[in-house]
Image (cartoon, rainbow, N blue to C red; front, side):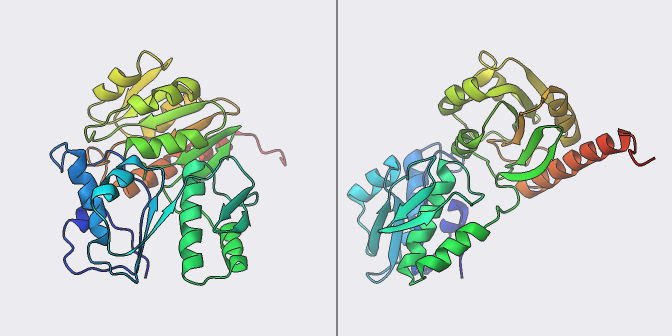
Length: 294
């Protein structure tokens, strides 16, 4: 079984013991739950290893400062493997002496290359043949709401990254974008510090479509560097505003940096509504085109 566990779930574990555990990165998120103390959030994340034994494996990001600091004073019982961030962009990913061709995969961005490196390291540890791993890399398709390309129309690419509910996830998404970006963001702010995004936003974002009940934090963070900021309170409105501003070669990126609970049931509902609105938009465009066979 493979489980993805949030800090909320890890807070409640008592006897749970994974044979292999991985902590990919630790960046500020859900700090309202942890009294706005990063050390408490880090402690919650490392509960995943609390019951591991010497024969178990914990994989961590070798370049994550919070993991390094925690482990320096909280040794674990399990085997510890540190995986560094790989070079990006690159056509070859090298893990534990094995080389894997990344040129034919859909994985884009440094974060996805790192995720692949961790998955490869775990698969090799579990005895999976490198050839089978290569086949898996080439057949992999992104899950919904994670840099999911939902449409390409009129020279514009529409990407659903609704799962990006914190600043670090948005940073990874923006790093993976090529060309100008119309960015749809907003929702329930969790005490976000948008500072780490400013340079990327300055370089890549031509317009920011705010989608939330309270968009003031986004205005405060970016109104001096984004040429145009628009407020919306529904997904169809956000998609329509983005369509008006996106041109050939642009990407419309839904990557909210916030929780979804102000306007949506959850991040999946938010992403599903985005996909539906985009498809409705493209359907309207197709309906407006003359039938060349008539």
